[in-house]
Image (cartoon, rainbow, N blue to C red):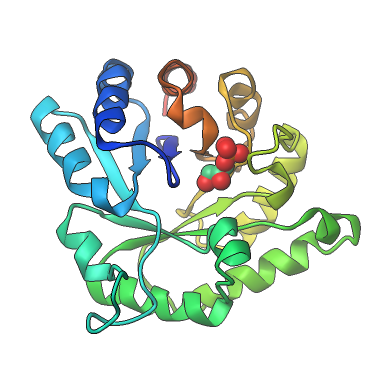
Length: 247
Ligand code: 13P
C-alpha cells in the first residue's frame, strides 16, 4: 500500500495563494510516484485545484473538508455531498476535531453524512482522536471505539485519520510509539486494507519516525502543508522511504 500524504489546508489561503502553493509543490508531487498525495482545499477551491492538477498531469486525490448534513435544498450557505463530488472531490474528511469541537458535530450528524457518502460514492476519511483529558483518564481507546462505531454497516471504501486533539496545531506530536499503539488498535477495528493516517503537528522533521510504524499508512498535515518547502519535503521523504521499503 502506497503511503498517503494529505494536505489539509483548513480555512486558509486566497485563490492566488492556492495557485502559488500548487506551483511550488508540483515538482515534489510529480517526482514522487511511490506516494499518493491528497489535497483537502476549501470547497470553493476544489475546481481550481482539480483544473491545475489536470493541466499539470499531477496525480492527486482531491478531498473536501466537509459536507452538509442535509440533502440538496433550501440550506443557504451549505454545500452538499453531490456538489463537492461534481467539483472534483473523490474523498471527504468527516468528523475532523475542529468540526466536532467548534461546530458541535455529533456522531449522529456524521452517520447522516456517511450515508451521503454512500449515495454519492465519495470516500469518507473519518477523523478520530482523544482529547488530553480522555488520554489522562485512560479513555483513548473507548473514545476512539465510539467514534469508529458509526462505520458499522458502512460497506464502502473508507480511510481513518487518527488525530489526537492535543496534538493538532500545538506543536506537540504523539511519539511514533504512542501513535503506533493507537493505530494498531484502529487497525484491529477496521478492515485490513483500510488506510489509517496520522495527523497532529506532522512536519518534515518528525514524519520519518511516524511512517516507520507498521500501522501508520500516511499523514494528514495541517500547518506544515501550507509551507511549500515543508510539504514538498514531506512528500519527497515519504517517497524515498517507500522506495526503500519497496511498496
Ligand atoms: P496540524 O498539522 O496543524 O497540527 O493539523 C493537523 C490537522 O488537523 C490535519 O487535519
